[in-house]
Structures are given as structure tokens and as C-alpha cells.
Image 1 (cartoon, protein in one colour):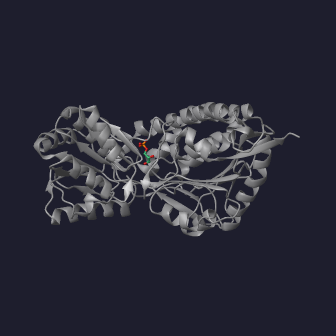
Image 2: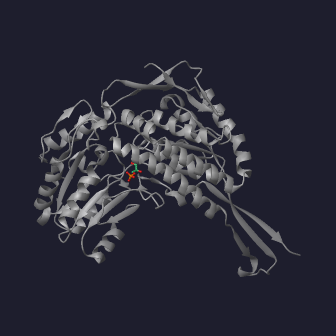
Image 3: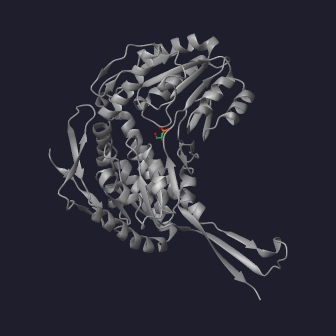
Length: 478
Ligand code: G3P
């Protein structure tokens, strides 16, 4: 309706002095749904500078009080699940039910984080000196975990709320302040989420949310000397950020090409159900989506048939109707997916369904007999298109998985737990799921990628630890 959503800084909702805005295109209607402020570098600078001073006081706020505020924010977030979910439906075409789940999951994450934080941060270490050669028992070392300072959080479009709070909550419980730069698609959902933190009554400037174009404020944010930690989830931009950022801890999750290796003795119905769920949930726009199926030749026909039958039942359409397959996030994304499909077609892949696209809506597609010379064997479509590569040995499957420059997650299906463990050890990925599709959650599990999939480890406990530093005090006895 022409209204531009305000950004959040110094505990207030503000219009940018730029007078400019950024449009958010609804992927379903392909029309402008919302507009957000195009913040200036000066406004970003102010948010970071204020975050710096707010953090000093916050770090002195008792841990139980910090936890109490987070619990309050979690409750408010859950109360507001309907309007926030509606934004997710309009901005990123997330199916209505999944959009609500994302907000509820986020509230749970914030609460869990508060609980975990009081335990982890409530404990330090006590060391004595005489365990190291040459020392008497004259030195006592006390350690505790102290905050880093200002944390910059940059979540991606696919979970603008959940992957924002997975950075915000650990940062805040650990005594840091936080500056959020939401993705453009999803920015309004993120602003609503930040409003819940505002309502909970956090001190002003402790959390701020700046919106705008990456080209205008992206580098300025990530290279700002006032930022003490960056937690980023997204694509290649993360690699560029890691090269430009200063000497500060980085937490990065940058996508994957999660392989699903299927052995001959697998439960075929379980496999088919997980391939469909893993490959096509949120139209494949998850870093942990199954992105290549590596199936033993002898059972490949059976698997492909079962998956085909399930794909035929997927509903395709608008997110408001809670369809399984909804429009992908942008035109460029749809074009990229189409490019991968056309490349596979030209190189002779078997199309299990007819390729169909309307606007940003792409019908689910299973590509059989994909070979390593096709782009889709290696690239991440981030769409409802899933390649199947037939393998003649388990080693071939492991080799394909490990030849990828990604290493986020992978999964293996077999009834033989010994084989599964050996394959898990051989797969160069941050996590291997045995007999289930890859997934980040439950959100307290460690979550990490090898190689180009990222640095550091996430999950509630790891994020809290990552956003702190050890401080020691040594008592020297005479
Ligand atoms: O794509 C982001 C990644 O964190 C996936 O999360 O919960 O869909 O496995 P999830």
C-alpha cells in the first residue's frame, strides 16, 4: 500500500534519512508486497556505535535477568505467530503451515537458549598450577566466559525469523549486543520479530535492525571495526565476507549439496518418504535439502517409481493454500534452476515428470540417470528439482559426495548399522544422518559444514560458546 516499514535503532522505529526504500516482491503475485527503508552507512554506523555502549551495561546485567527477558521475548513471539507467519507467506512464499511452525520453533529456540545459557555461563573452571611440571601449588586460575561485544547477524531468506533468532538469542544471553541485517525477502517478518524483542523490554540499542541494499551497506557492516563477531547464513557472499572481515570470530553456514546414499538393503518406503520430504520441503529451498540421490543400481528402478508416485501427490500452488510446492523466492532463482534443468536435458537426463514453470512457480521434478558431467550433479538448485545418480558401488557414492566442494550434511539408508557407521565416517560432511533426511534441528544439535559449507559450528550450545571468550584470573600465592 505504499507504506515503508521503519527500521529499528536506539529502541525506536525510524525512517531512513536516505528517503529511499527497497521493494519486497511477493514471489506468488510478482508484485511489490512491502517496502523497507534503505538505511545509509551513517545510520548503520550509529546502530553499531550505540550497540557498543549498550553492550557494556548489558554484560553487567545479571544472567538470570537476561534469561528472563529472553523468555519474555519468546512468549511474545509465539503470541504473534499469526501476523509474522503471514509475512513469511507473502515475502518468501513459505507454505502457511510451515510459516507458523517457523515462528513457534523460533520461540522455543529463544527459550531453550535462555535455559542453556544460564547453565553454560553460570559455570567456570578452577585450575591449580602444580599439575604442570616445575610448578608448586601457588597459582589458582579461575576462568569464566565473557561476551565478545557487538555481534552482527545476517540470516538468509529461507528462515528470516528462525535463522535470525538462532543468532540473536545466543548473542544476547551471553551478554553481547546485536545488529541484525535481515535478508530483503523476509525483512518485514524479521522486523515484526524484532518488535517482539522490543515489546519484551530489552534495553535500548541492545538490539537493532537495519534494512537496505547489500550493495550499499553490506561491506560497510561486515568490515565495520565496531563489529566483534559475524554470524552469517547464506550463499557465496559468506566466502567474500570471510575474506574481508577483520580478526573476529566468524560463524558461517553457506549451503550444501547434501547426498542421500541408498544401499540395497534399505527400507525402500522409508527412503522414498525421506527423499520427497528432504528434497521438496519448502520447494527445496533449504541448505539441508537432499540435493542428490546416489542409489545402488539394483534398487534404483524401485526407488524412482516410489518417489515418482509420491511426487505426483505433491500439491503445487500458492503458499496461502498451504501447497507443498510454492513459487521460488525470485525470478533469478527460477531462471537459475531452469538453467540447471535445461543443461541436464541437453546432456540426456531422464525426466520423470514434465518440466513445467509459471512465473516463479516450478513444478517438482525428479531427474533420473544424471551423470557427473551435468551441472545439476554438483550445483545447488535451491528449488524443487532433484537429480538421481545410479551407482554400482557404495564407494562410488562416497566418492561423489566427497568430490563436492560442499560438506554440510549427508544421509545414508541401510538396515546394517555397521555399514552405516563406516559410511558416515567416510563422508566428508559436518553431519551424517542414518536412515533419515538431513536436517538442522532439533535446534540444540550441533550444526556445521565442512569445506565451502562453512566455518564454526552452530546449534544453541555451540553458538553460545562461540559468542563468548574465555577470561582467566590467576591468584598468585606467596
Ligand atoms: O537452509 C538453512 C538450514 O539451516 C536448514 O535448516 O531446519 O531446514 O534443516 P532445516
